[in-house]
Image 1 (cartoon, rainbow, N blue to C red):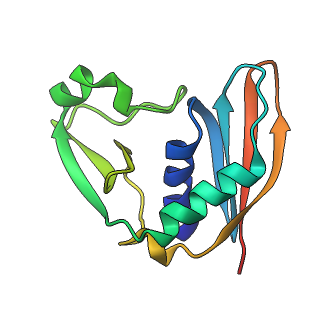
Image 2: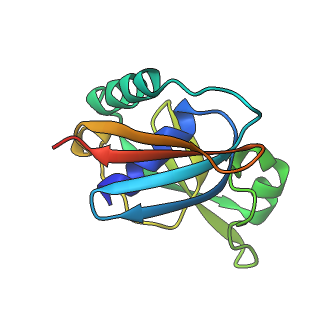
Length: 137
């Protein structure tokens, strides 16, 4: 739950569509569709820990299928689309930070995540960069 919420923060810090990801015990990763660019581990860690320390509220929101279709920028994942057809889609909003479709469980405030550090940043293809995150505690 803590790491899942942290991965939403990572989406706010690293620009680029998400091509994959995983959440494990005390660790997580996201793969981003990015051109050949270097990502700064220290900068990413500092931004994540700043957003965590700012203790933003985390809450679900609902929109209609039509509203989602009118706002395609909300969907950051390239291969997985949110479920549609029920008439409404659940979003996760991190106050003033991130808003995207998600049906998972999350913390109530970013401060509950706790300090994190960045593990390896790996090149997984011509435009695929993998960012690994671990809890610092």
